[in-house]
Image (cartoon, rainbow, N blue to C red; front, side):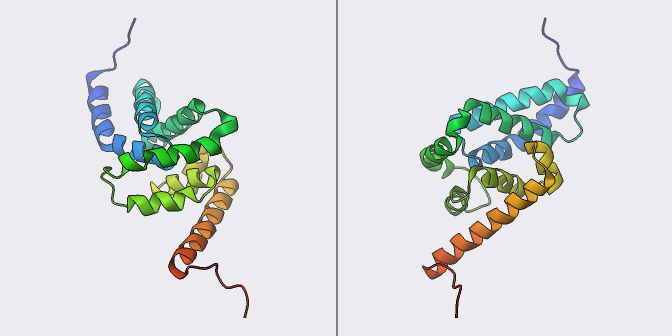
Length: 173
């Protein structure tokens, strides 16, 4: 027997769905998903949210937690980093049409330079989540999230310096 949520829940959910689906798919793309994976996992996460709607206080964080966990379940954990690199390469063409405020190519290039854990927390930070919220979403300690963010920023600064100067940063006189 299928349980139908009350009409007011469906109406609230529909508004949330329309306003958040695109950014959820974009987060999954930044985490390394192909277009199909991102769309499928986002839809599944939204269905889970609908089922738990009345008991969830932070719906954006909840749906992202469900989506990221769902995405990682679709990947073989032993191959996550290698597969993510292949997915990044295969999704560039469809992301060019994605209506985002960021410079998509440059953002993806910078994110590609990060290890998986750093890419994940940085993508969530870009989406506006606090370190505490990221820790809750990823199931990691706040100190680990801060460390990953710090290392990601350092790596991005290094990549940006190399791209503007054409060389590594100067460490000597």
